[in-house]
Length: 202
Image: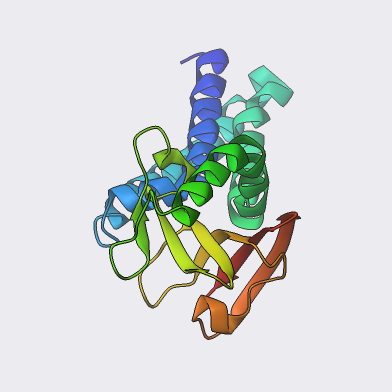
């Protein structure tokens, strides 16, 4: 196999790893947590294989291809470091904030005027054309009364024992508290803009 093809294989693997990390919340919603282990293990096995292969390529071809023979290993190391040490969560949330704020605001208006109602425990199924603004296609009403409105859009909605991530609109324009979120602890809180916050909580 020529080096150009090998480098393409490692580059495609790298892109796939980054996309998997970027869309992890959406992938999590497609699988149960138990089935999610299947693609995760397959990806791990593929990564280990490519890591070992990149070392063999360097050993076997360093004399003939010189620096080029190190490119697969270099790509492998860079992608592995990105995978382990880089979080795309806040970057993705900020990008989605720019893309989806208008649609999220429309949903909030419909919740305020009663056009959209929850299922009795706060969950609101988003209509067609709006499902992408929350990772599981639902919004969550934390408060909607004469005092104010607080609505969350999930950026990661795990199991009950896992921390969750949510983009929150609050008409008070104040950071949401543990009492409002009905959580034990807020791990991270970022202001995205007026009335909008992103939280990681449990």
